[in-house]
Image 1 (cartoon, rainbow, N blue to C red):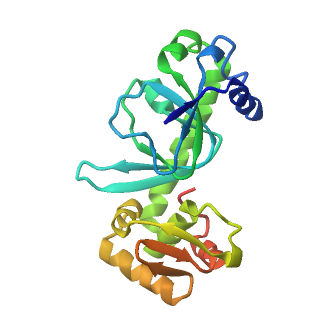
Image 2 (image 1 turned 120 degrees about the vertical axis):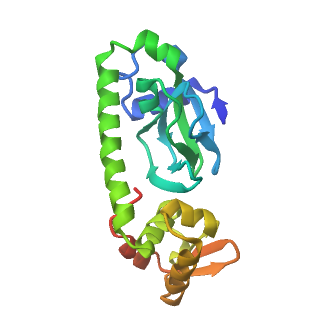
Length: 231
């Protein structure tokens, strides 16, 4: 994480997403702009939550770990999204792990300033209510679909979600993935995922190299993903 000490850039994001009514003038001096690199963790499940983050650029991946050590992907998020809203309201540790899929920019503010200047600020409270209720709806739908959809659909959706460049020549792009980690993230076994990858390779949708998946037919992969259940 790196703090970007550029107040004009911060204000530009505030203006773009019309955040002025949400963060009143008393809060503005305490707002900071942070950047995260691809693969960097924004927060980890079980860690103390001290900041509320607003995603204003890039894409993040949200996943959870079970007591048995298994990992399951919940969703991918793009702006405008809030990280740490539930934790702020309930005063609890981070519920999920959030990781940058691309370079990411976040507006962050410490809980102490929110409690001091925003606890009775209606636009901020309404904003949190809308974000949290939407998040619960999406999570419920995502968990149900993860159980209901076959592995090939989940894999296609995952590949579409982590593939950022949709203008690559010849409709191709490379994604570096761990097969074992991906199996955990989409809720299947390593062996079964290997079989599914082999089938998608035979069908001409992807090509597998060492540590890399090459998307050969993005449109066919998009059709297989359908509603892209992880978005």
